Image (cartoon, rainbow, N blue to C red):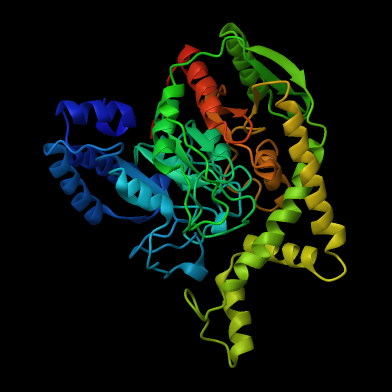
Length: 485
């Protein structure tokens, strides 16, 4: 087995035993990138020279016995996180030349833990999409089938882990942008509780929904990454000052006696038959592990999509007002005066999906419409959160499919925004409620495409998600396939 195929914890053991070096691991990863990146296109920016310098320094620390959580581990970063001195584009023309003067908090934390950064991964422009097809830098392809999408908006981060082009990666999740691509690419992806991981230095899409989380090859690696990035940050106003447990301690615990809620609203007409069958099989595994699966109801689920596509575009409209060609990023050369320069810059700099959402959001916030749209959506959002609060009085976790379908063909839904938006129908609710969610692989279609299983838990119960996902992962007895690129 090649080094790029191993997990963080497997590589940690080899590093500590002296069997491998950080530079040797990086050689393996960049060899894999050289072999497959031309087809996958997971990255916007590769950082090979810098990574080799970081790996050499890691080897010096390893030799001195100074080994941290992620020392020498190659990690990829979604191109939504500010990286000092390194281009940060958010997948957009309007930021194609933006170089931040500082690091995001999560970048600082990973660097402190010893990570080696391989590059910045591709994404839907400003994280607005479910397929990584709206990126200014082109489409990322699913390593399991190069004619299919990897999911979105963090498709590059998911594809990079699935293809072995890094050992783990970071993404962001506003309505499912970690969990959905994790499911479609056959990897583990977690969206933590809102406020658990600092968003300082992450380029904002919808500030009340955005959250940062990891993509990994297994659940134990997810716990390791969460240990590295979670925690209070005084620079970030929504960061919550609450204790962070050792997530790795949850990996070996069982779930005997747990109540696992199965919401009827998530097993709907239109869900792919193979996805439904895989999830039903997973429910059987959970029951064999001692979990009691009981039917529950989340009655306001039917409103989640409508609420999300009012709240998220409204917040995006506000957040994206800062991109005007004056302070940083792209500036149109065609404006004859200041106002025309603003208009031309935004018209030429933003892609079609971003412009669509800005217009929807601006309309929802406009005079005479605010009460009918944004205010009403916020009220229904409170009811959605209350549904989850009520549900978690009955059960320890909730189990659902992650995505209603496996990965679809590139270009299949680009002409129908509603069909595209429905890709996130099972993940949006967690963002509206602010609760954590985790997707873990649970099988394959007859055509060999991965299927994802989602677990949801109450606020700041990420450990509970890791506990049940690890128990499920270890007891599936399923075949651990890898994409044959």
